[in-house]
Amino acid sequence: MKKQLFYILTIFSLTLFACGTVYKQVTVQKIGGFKVDGLSFDGIKAKVELELLNPNSYDITIEELNYKFYINKELVNEGVETFAQVLKGKETSKIQIPFKISLTNAVANLIKKFDSSKTYNYKIEGKAKVSVFGQSLTKNFSHEGNY
Image (cartoon, rainbow, N blue to C red; front, side, top):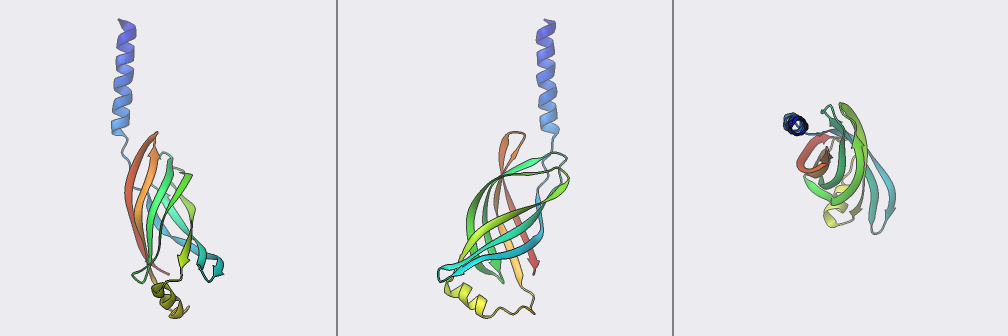
């Protein structure tokens, strides 16, 4: 009987602990950089570095990002990236998203108009699949800024 009571209390305590753990949204703090890896007639290969803040006291693993990236409200890229990147609790981490920008008319016009003295608005939004204590969660994210 004591053994059964011990198991019941242990399971009850673990359930309370799990229910009491509140997930705080990981946020994009800023775009840390943009690096062009290659240029061809097919498009531009690049990487965007995101700085992410995990406000939780525990680690979170990013499993997948489904994203759209805009510059001056023009969609320049969208895709799905699979990761296994751990974001340490209470820390800012950097992840790189590799992608290819096709030279469509909209993007070609944006490149033609590019002026390094101007400020450009950007937006990245989508869904992130994260793993917390072995459970997968899908959360929306969005970040806007100037570059």
